[in-house]
Length: 260
Image 1 (cartoon, rainbow, N blue to C red):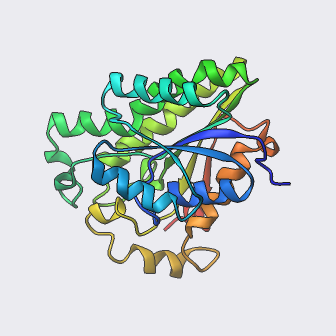
Image 2 (cartoon, helix red, strand yellow):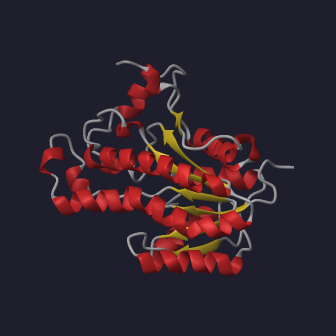
Image 3 (cartoon, rainbow, N blue to C red):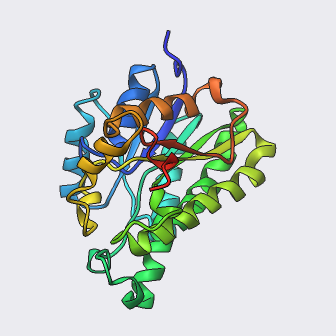
């Protein structure tokens, strides 16, 4: 019997089978979870997400969502509630910043709209989704909400720029949500995954050598793998983490422990 047998939840953010969200879904499915998925609007995005998820299991529940629209978020969570009688976990694995400003030397030039758009999609949406998931989770006796962060939220990673600021806001948002939703038995945590070569990370300038550098410097002498984060997500969604909330859990092979 898997650690997540009988648990049902929603994963938001699978773009392809290289993303952290995909590895999380795969690990959760292997442990018995029933998973629904949200994807960006449009037939192309639906096909791309569906193709990736079908590598995990057949007949996935898929629904479009524009996270920048309150109406679209309402539609997603209403549709989920119509088709599922409980929500035990919610995985927030979305972020956005205009790649033009994700280059070394461009942070101070970031225009107001690009700055605020990054905060909106990358951080505010965690609060927006948690608020919509709250009632259904509470009816089931609680649940686990998790979001994906990165070490660039705490230390300067040249080129990460506004995304680092947005991830810092995401981690703080998770802590405030953990406090507010705790009385309903809802736990909220972030996972700070190490550098993984994905569609999202490719938008950040200066990342060409990060993978090799991680393998050389990390205490485990290797780079993080998607499965490492997937296993941590299983732990956070399971009853094994029943007393864990408001935490940022590093899954980066120890890179965050180094002084240089």
